[in-house]
Length: 147
Image 1 (tube, rainbow, N blue to C red):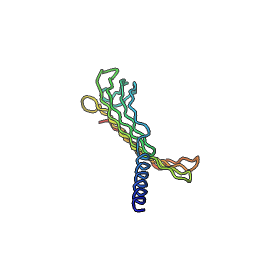
Image 2 (cartoon, rainbow, N blue to C red; image 1 turned 45 degrees about the horizontal axis):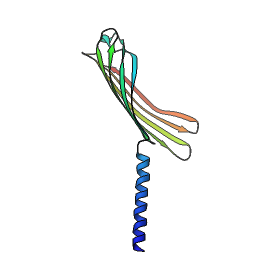
Image 3 (spheres, rainbow, N blue to C red; image 1 turned 45 degrees about the vertical axis):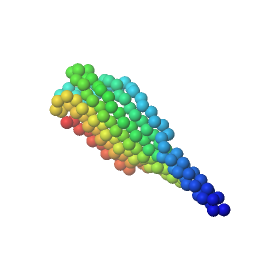
């Protein structure tokens, strides 16, 4: 009887650990490369220019969160200057049985160019809630800086 109780206890602990691990584990874990082209107002000494290049992104998603990390090299169409991109985004998603959910995400993008005044820093923090079909943006704070 004692051995049976120990076996049941070990099975319960193993089952709990495997369920908890499955919920926290990656749902998708991918790496992608894509071509990018966009206007950057800080580039070309503040006159702005179109930057093009390739961005490599690593995306890790679980049932409750997502992480996006990107880096790349972009070249100015006017100056030929090379810019380095470093981007991080993290989001968490929480849902309840009563059809309510919340999403919080934090974005940080840095585009670093040669010399002073050519760098672009974008920051965003947002919190969104959902109740049924209604979505409410509780907070969406942006900042875009040339430095």
